[in-house]
Every structure is written in structure tokens, then in C-alpha cells.
Length: 357
Image (cartoon, rainbow, N blue to C red; front, side, top):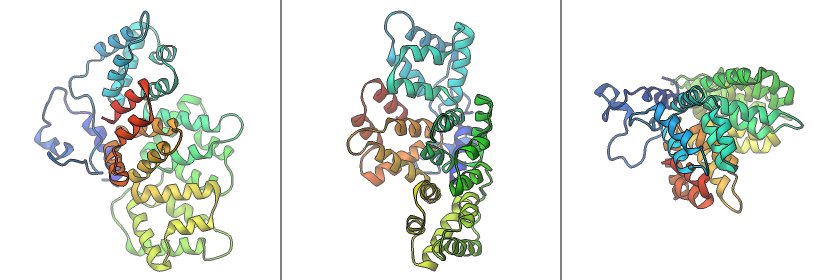
């Protein structure tokens, strides 16, 4: 069963298929439920699926219609429905809404809501792969490219997620994601992103110690071992090895070279390439920790980076959000919900907090 991340992904999909109305999963499904009394979910556990309490698409569509009709908008009803349904259920609500009222739910919400609350609501109406595809398109459209977005999305996803994003991109924009990335980036950054788009990462569970040692040597020779960084080894190793295998390679690197792989990357590369390599290393070492750090940085100090908050909370909601919350608590000694609560306000705050619940 792939590495931890693809596992939590496939489990959360599986757990959505629990028959409605069963308070207790059958014995066979038991491993999917959290062990009782363990305060914090462990990272390999599935993200929570929200609506086991009898999902009724007709009722939800009606409630949303009523919330947006006439004078004033009933934001509380919108928050309640969007935050308590799974992504698949929200797709069904969209279809039902369109069939019943002849209007796109997105368009209706766009006209009723505003600001970050609107952004979050619309993000929730996309499938995660569509949302990521839109982010990528926005990052490359027009003048200049927002490389940070390309790096953030492509360096943190599983093969399955990358394939879904490529398909969504093609469908939404009638363009090839690969061609757009090739056209919009250059040099070594382009090489690593194109490697990642091939979605060729090994997702097995077996660690090959000899290979880890060899890869560590190759990385050293490609990097500090000589003048000018020969990036091929980095591309091959960082884009294709499983996360578990990479952790063994980073340990071997530390032992052989007496230096942290992150330090080596810091001293050998710069700019966006450095960002991409470090994101890949951090994702392999601790994906949930990586997202916890990004969330913390988006809120600490003056001003809040709302985009990042929306991106991570929405896209990880059904992948590994409980594990990210646990990591956040452990690293920063404060709860993610509390920090979001004190850093945001209004309906935007209410929706995020409901999603974190």
C-alpha cells in the first residue's frame, strides 16, 4: 500500500463510501475509525469524512438557494453546508443546484459573497485537482510567473494527485500543463518540475539501503563535490524515489558527508531551484510538518497570508488535515484553530474554523 501519504489519501477516499446512517462502521471497516481515547490522530490515519449523518442533496441545494434569495444572505447556512460536506458531496450539490434552479452555484455565491470568504467558498466548490489546476494556471498566465505556486503544488503531491491535476488542467483550459510549465520556466527549475509532472515517483514501502548510500554519494558528487552543481542526480533522486527511501538517503548523506542535506542545498543552490529542492526534501521528511510550518508562517508576525491559509486548509481537508493539526500543536504548542481564530475575522474566520473542526 503506497507510502504514508498516498495511503492516507486512498483511505480517506475509501471512508467516504461508508453506508449512510451507520453510527458504527462494520468490523471490517474498523481500522478506519480513530482508536477511542487517543487524543490526537496519528499521521497515517484517514482525514475525517464529515457527513456521515445522512447527506441529503435536495435539502442542501434548497437551503443554499434559500440562503441566497431575497434580501441579505444567510452566511451561517452557507458555512454550515460547505464545511460539513465532503468534496464529492459538494459536487453533487452543485449539479443538483444547477438542475433545479438553472444557475451555477458558483455564480450565485460570487454575487452574494465577497473577499476571502468568497474565495474559500469557491475553492470548496472545486474538486481538489481543479482547484490546484486553477492555481497553476493563474501562476503562469499573463506577465511573469509565480514560481512559488508551481513549486508548492508540484513538489508536495502524490503521483495520483499530479495525474488528476494534469487532467483537470487540460479539461478546464484546453491546454497541456506540461507544455505551459516548460514554456514558463527555464534551466534546472524547469527540469525538476517536468520530472515531477511525469508522476513517476516510486510509492512502494521497501527501503533499499544500498541504493540510499549510492544516491547519497551521487547527490554529494552532483552538489558540493565539484564546482557548479550538476543537477541531474538531484532531479532523478528527489523526483523519483519514495519518501521512505529518501529519508534513508538523507540519513546516509548525513553519515557519509557529516552534513545535513538541507545545508548542502542551501549552500549550493539559490532562488527558486533552492526552494524546489528544499520543498521536496521537507515533504519527504515530514509532509504534515511541512504544511504545519507553512500555516504557522502565514499567520505569525504582522499581517496574514490568507491565500496560503485557504490553499492548505481546503486542499488538505480530506487528505491529512487531522495529522497537520496534530503536528502544528506539537511544534508550536498552540492549536491551529486558535491561531486561525485570532488571525482572521468574520465569515471567513467562521468557515475556516468550521473546516478545521
